[in-house]
Image (cartoon, rainbow, N blue to C red; front, side, top):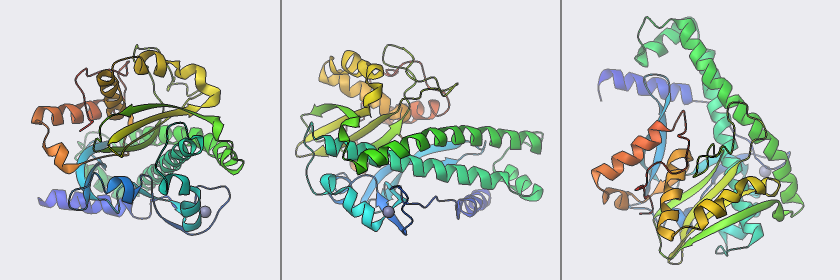
Length: 338
Ligand SMILES: [Zn+2]
């Protein structure tokens, strides 16, 4: 690593320090949080790991001040963790999915996968918010340093740089508001066992693939290019919860949404589930690449891909960070079920 890179990574870790959001996601709980897994460590991450590592997306702030993903080895004990539950709630809430295999149609398990994905996403967004707030609170001298370390040309004035940081920060705040409005009802539904409030569509693949996903996101366009979520006006936003994992020689893809939104998700039946299994895999691969950050792959399986396949995956990922193409099916060859 050259001097500049060392200095930059120091600055980055300094910035990250203290930004991690720590709070138990369960209603009104103020107990001390632990490092909770959003994907089962022993059952799933273990299965796809090599020498204790899995491959995960690491998002760094690149030299233009944008978050930029890379794929890196990460210890499975740390992978997918977040400071979002106290020990008691992490242990007790998730027993039905930690201790028992998933069975298609088990409403409680499907609800819990969705609930955990929401908790993780909420925590991540709050952490990002803290990070940008910290960047915005830097003194003039520190901001000059940050701009220099990020390699931003000096002719981009500090005010413009600040404006740009503010813009990203505002986008994060909008997503947090949406997640906040899901947190309350999801906790109420959990407390009252109203698991039917989450509906799920499941794909069962007859093979164990080395991929694990736990995520929540807002799909902009369906496979045929119809608008599902208008992210410009952020009105009536409809999340999808996606969980993928291998289990007993099979791989399960669980796509969940709020029962009240079911009319908006008919495309899952009409445009995904009615196709051949191979095509379903391609569409879900596109969906994961376009929208998911909390995804883990087997390092060995990834290495076995061709350079072109690896490049295509990262390219699509990168491309979609700030604006999504107007279809869920961009690359007809994409297949991350490895
Ligand atoms: Zn708690």
